[in-house]
Amino acid sequence: MRIGVVTFPGSLDDRDALRAVKIAGGTPVPLWHGDEDIKGVDAVVLPGGFSYGDYLRCGAIARFAPVMNEIIRLAGPPTQVSSGLPVLGICNGFQVLTESHLLPGALVRNEKQQFICRDQKLRIERTGTTWTNGYEQGQEIVVPLKNGEGGFVADDATLDMLEGEGRVVARYLEVNPNGSYRDIAGVSNASGTVVGLMPHPEHATEAGYGPEVNNGTDGLAFFTSALQGVLSA
Image (cartoon, helix red, strand yellow):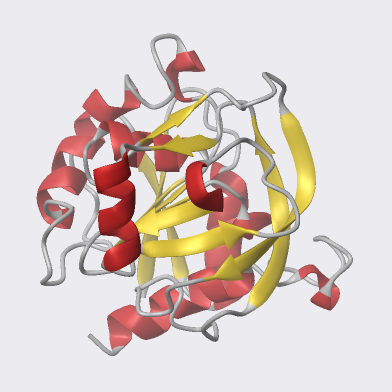
């Protein structure tokens, strides 16, 4: 299975995501922001970083990159219940997904106006997605978190919709690091093919290099899930 990872100007974690795909057993495919061809990949990861320097809003300029035209077309609208191109947006990639309207809500400046870098405990709330089917419902994991504008916000109607349709993918535990409404760390589209997550699972895929919990590999299942999810689709 081929999973593409997009590099935008200012991406920081593209190589980490490519390595995570390889560790999971997939074939990593580098994709360039200026290309409209996504090389026939089976899924796409939008990595973390500061795309285009976040000069307008985080992810706002990346949303108009040529490569995103094809990704948006293939992924389909957020209300789509049939399968489209699987896409995982991590941190800045999550911001790109909301700016692209592939996911609802928005990401804003952290509540305490400070950049945060910590190992973060999460609870997996939805396992019926392309990217989380390898987890158990309610499973608690620890992965790194690093963001300055990671607060997930939406109006009450949107939050109620996400809760009611079971589209909250992950929730912060023990501490809400950035003021995200209802402790939401990640959400999905209706079909579960598009997922946005503020913490960084790609930094917890290899024993000895992640948090000192479960050998530091709690994030690996995001990538092995994609392999299993696409192959079984």
